[in-house]
Image 1 (cartoon, rainbow, N blue to C red):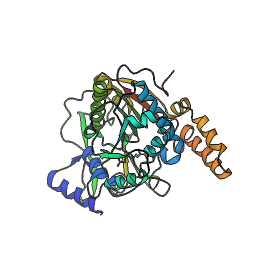
Image 2: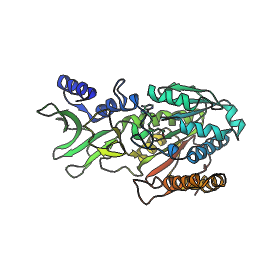
Image 3: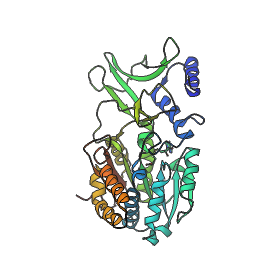
Image 4: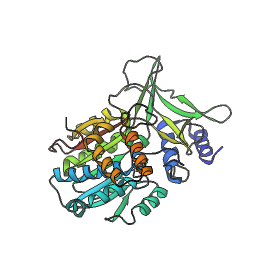
Length: 360
Ligand code: SAH
């Protein structure tokens, strides 16, 4: 049994079963054993690969979007450029490199990375050591300095804990993690019915909610309404709130049992974009999209960017550009292609005009 499993088992033995949300929070963010706290999970040798790690084109186009968002917000000085969950820092590095072509934007912003993992902070520091701007770190977006802000979040919300409610004959019950007779971790259900959930559904139906995602979106939307600016959210997820369980555990590019090795596998859930949009609307923000990642990147000109890079590429590099373009914008095979599964949504001050990527 690994150390985190031992600790969770002891916790359950003393306090009783814990919620899935708490379990997921411990697996990902336990200060000593949490998945993100202890490792660099990205890339071919890691557990999964993300768009900025696939190709520089992704971050470059987001950089163009960010500087355009700043201009459309009235070119405020100073402004904040904030990234949530920056991973290896690759996206911000590509964003800041292209931002050199809009020096007014680069001069106007201070750069803030919202990151809880000390291991990833160190990697981000190395990646950004020669960036054209100084970078500072925060553990929570509410710790970043006030002012108009352009915020980017790629594969951030999927990493936040979820709660599950399961429909039983007598009502909705919350999913818990408890112990079986031999001391192993098992899923179970709360003894108590959730009195506020009355949605009719067939027995066994699941409602998945992410209160932490909603709180973060709601805080950011309130800030954008108050101070101006825009946020871009990119993640895999669904457009309409619906019943179902999307919790998944991934280790070494394969699906594994989420209870088997706590802290060793990446635990994620698909993002409920409709719920995020409702949280943003409730604060008075404007929401654009979601559109598919393919639609967004095509409208931002990924084809032209790929062609420009091809002109300077050797045959091997040219093939890598073609492959990356296919992975980022293709939609046929959701295990390989990100273009259809991934969605892009912008949340802005209510007066923001239609933005690049969302123009119909
Ligand atoms: N955006 C990156 C990495 C995505 S992985 C990329 O596209 O490659 C998720 C990132 O969010 C990691 O950097 C992880 O450490 C960070 N993270 C997870 N939970 C967090 C939280 N509650 N607050 C801040 N960062 C968090």
